[in-house]
Length: 568
Image (cartoon, rainbow, N blue to C red; front, side):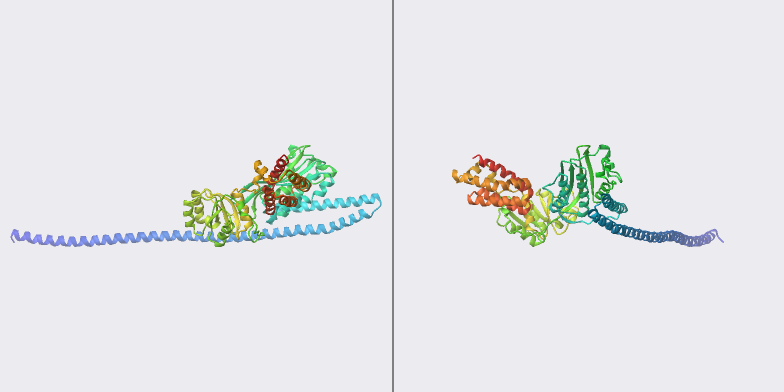
């Protein structure tokens, strides 16, 4: 075979071998690739297996925890029920104890009291009086211990309701007048004119505390005065809340400095309380202080030995009652011209048409312009182009979008805001940086309440008797009277009006002030003295509205007016 043929033969074999090699290489690469894919699948399955195992394990733990939580929750519910049952049992026990002890004790007191009126023998009479006195002390002690036990156990219910403040404080103090008078003590009540007409609080518990403070003041005062002052401390117009203080001040024996704190502790009492007249076990003030704290208040003491004591009972965050048209007697003779006589601009924003119409109609015959909007967008456009003296706005609109509306209005106007609401605003959260809320009106809106709040906020000329403030005007007001007529007027005034005025100022009694006003009105009309006619009419109107501040101011102005008149 030639060399050439051998070469080609070998080349063919080599080529065949190469092809076979390439084929095996492809098969290998394919098998390798499949092996890698299989490896990935196996690895992923292992991971999934492990993950599933981990998840299953944690799910099991979670289920165990949930089961344990259910068991614990059940135990808590059972414990709560047991505690509530125990509380009811204790409450019933205390109530029954009071009843069971009072029943025989009342018999003892009743019969011993009968014996004190029937026995003639001095020794036996002394025994009967001791039984009666000791029975009263025992009954009082039992009441105090039960009350203290209720407070300590948390069996304390606060019954909040709307209270007429003037009537409440007058009745509390009036209940102690006879006892004070029997000791020759002068007991007086002074109520801050800014105290709202009606507040929401637990009148029974407040009365209980005030009664004890006033009784103690009478007990430890041999001569002098006892004054009860009701003061307005902090007024939160935005939340419609007020803090008040009830201050009982006496000119009695006083308390030394080191006893000021101890006197409020259980079984602590004043050192002079060991005297026969002042005996007690020292539970009253302790109970009072605990009770005050549970009503978001406190009792504090300021005293100097030998000079008297001042106990201050404070209550915080009392809600002011908002009166609506359903709660007040609507008056048709309210003169809205008294409100900013020169005129003002008022805006009402409310989607309730009746509220808008009511406010607008009230100012119809006045110089005040009222613009109403049921659409917030239109109201904001109006605020951009005009300045307003007062804005009435529905509280739900004001608080829209998390108080965003309040912030927008605040940036556009600094006018005072009065909210219009159908419910209590005490728990509504008004944002900082929002509008200046100065008051609230309850729907349906009372015309009387609208008059009061508008009169106050718009800083109107409260007095129709502006002539009383200007001496030259005063003189000209009497210029139509000749000397004889003026003397006759002053004579009638001195005889008929002055005694009533003096008595009204001394007693500060509204009925007496009204009597003075009516008598003055009749005399002023008789002599055609316009400023006094206007003064009398307005004063009568303020009495109807119970505007104490304005009444006091007008009475002081009238006193100066008459002095100037007498010097003419």
